[in-house]
Length: 210
Image: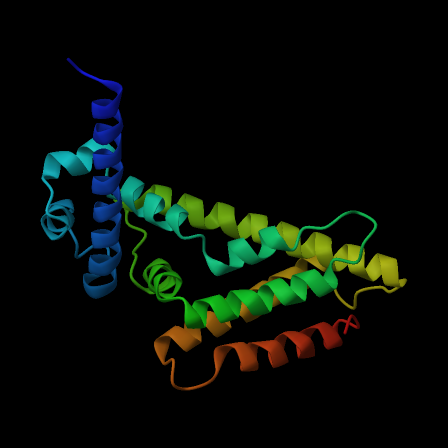
């Protein structure tokens, strides 16, 4: 007889297999690149069958996006935390969240690994079109949230930004994103959080918001 306990164990086993597949994908994507890693490679590294991969994921792009969603990228997480009420100045929260994103990248191995894969180990070939779509959607959402925060902060302070808000948002996003990517190329070259804190403060000062 099929019992509730058996159903629970079956579900737990399936979740454990899915987690193992994503763990294996993280490691292999970092070591070999996304295009250089097959689903069979991932299955073998996870001690699972190729059929198990297709049970959980439609294709490599689906698996890649699931890997990304399991570990929210620092910028996404930071901006989500920085949301605030319409009457409060969002700038201190935005600044703190961006610095926290740098800190998390530098100190959390899994976040660092996934961010490295997402920025350095993936090629936007046709089969990975859904990955490109996700990256673009995340970037657009980040730019929107940064722009709104800068606009609201300037308005509450009675200031006018020295450039269009969208351009200011793009600059701040590129600053933080670029710092992380350059640090990943050579983590010993500079201290990510400290240098990032100084760069963010200098950028905000240039906007008249520091």
